[in-house]
Length: 258
View 1 (cartoon, one colour):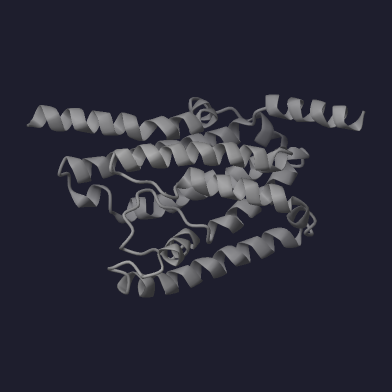
View 2 (cartoon, rainbow, N blue to C red):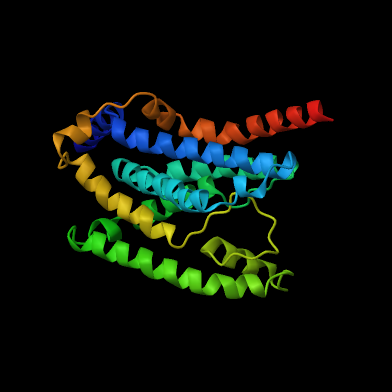
């Protein structure tokens, strides 16, 4: 009987979408698509490098990845099947890896790989994180975000400067990259790192507890935003399809120019 009640509650929660959360995800998706469009313009159409590499998007790229991860953490608090969700997402992510390899724009560990790993990790260790005191949790997670960010910022230049050629241990090299120690020897597009984003995800799971229990102000649940929530609800499909579409458009423009 208790399982039936839980199942009914979960179905009810899934039906009650919160526009402001979907809108945040939708805005992040738009920024990501624009960023990748600028990348294609620079690499394939000889556009100016500053179009892709500029201070504005250098900051915004951290923002839209952070929003994706944080919102995914919130959503994971609503689900009791995070291992299953994460496993399915990881399969999709690996399909994207295969397709982008064929496109010569390889994504070995992009945002979907990252979110899938976090979902599985949280699903396996949920009790540990959910039992942390709700007052202490955000302080702990924010502190770990700052500490790991500073540590990676200090370490990465050393790793980059010594990694023009791959190290002998390629497994170790790839592990470094996934953790956040970027190396120039890796030909990898849309690369994301576990650190510090794992703590952003866990901060999202903490916030998700308040969202799920209805403890936030009423306007948070009732606030309506046009367009962005629809994009946010279809974020996975847009992520999967946007680069093949952008690439096709880019190649068409390149063909028409020649």
